Image 1 (cartoon, rainbow, N blue to C red):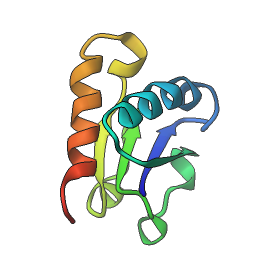
Image 2 (image 1 turned 60 degrees about the vertical axis):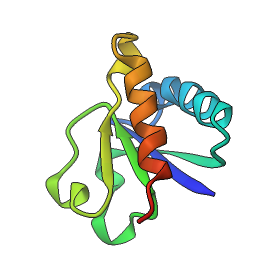
Image 3 (image 1 turned 90 degrees about the horizontal axis):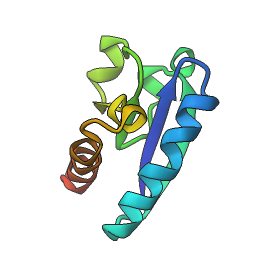
Image 4 (image 1 turned 180 degrees about the vertical axis):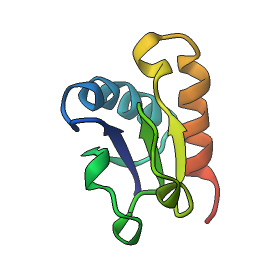
Length: 96
């Protein structure tokens, strides 16, 4: 099972909106995924267990050094949404 962190400022509203889209898309592609919502302030490089982070705000560089981070704003606006979902699926499909 792959793990995706959805990260926004509070870990509640915005990431909740992304959750359904990400889960539905990945499951339609046959990717077994666990999705966990976080506030950006909760992230620590030494505790990251995610395969991918989808974020709606800037992520500290030290986090980007240990995990793939994908900008998830398009999942809110709908502009470029399909490309973002494809990028998430691709990142989860790559061997680490």
